[in-house]
Image 1 (spheres, rainbow, N blue to C red):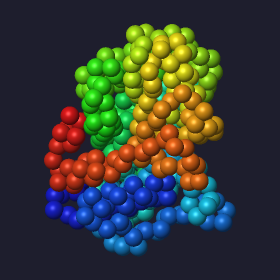
Image 2: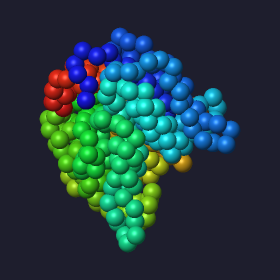
Image 3: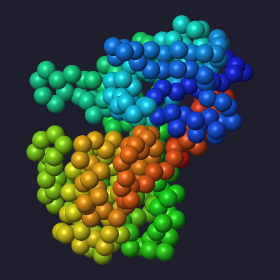
Length: 327
């Protein structure tokens, strides 16, 4: 572990370089000079073009699909880039390496749901640790217990304070007519804490999932009639669950309007079109995953997490408590 007083350096892979630049801007330091890419056969490579000996190094890389120079990169490309960069920094004698993973992929594979299933989240945690990371900084893990999959310190930041600030301003004039809704029973704890911070009542959409990436809304627990509704989730993948929940809240529950927010906008497959065609007024994401290039939807908006991650990085570098960021 690095001793206090060493210099700080931030590097990035290709999955979310703009966020890394914004974090560096908040910290008042330049982005580290490196190159990460792929050879003609698809093998990934990383080159670090400045000394990191003894430095406190932070590698910013969401494990999500991305696009670079018009060419698509997969979740596995992003993960491999992260592992190779960590290995390169370790072999270059970096003092401490923190993997900054705003969106942690494979988090939904956190347990066995049927015989002979892998627990991929644990495997990825092992890979990151074996590559040489000393600690991990992430945001809104799909399951909190994933922190225990690592044998190194993990700081799991919460995106809810950013949303709280946004909605306090948005619904200042109609606070008593607004309520928070959990899109499923599994997200109740997260939605309840969010509703408490906003001092709003809570309702729940009870649904039965028939198969992966599809859901059937069954019932609404709570009275949302003539209310402004805030749907809270940790991520939106294909958008099916979110759009079905919003439709039920309006058609069955009689909600006045529905706004959704989620930390991670995975937006795979037909997600953007579903949101465009849905009854949702607005969907707000954090930029843990960058907006899809060439995809336009007026309903989708992003809020930056650069300031929060810069604060966390500063606390880690200064060796002070990160706990104030969770309040």
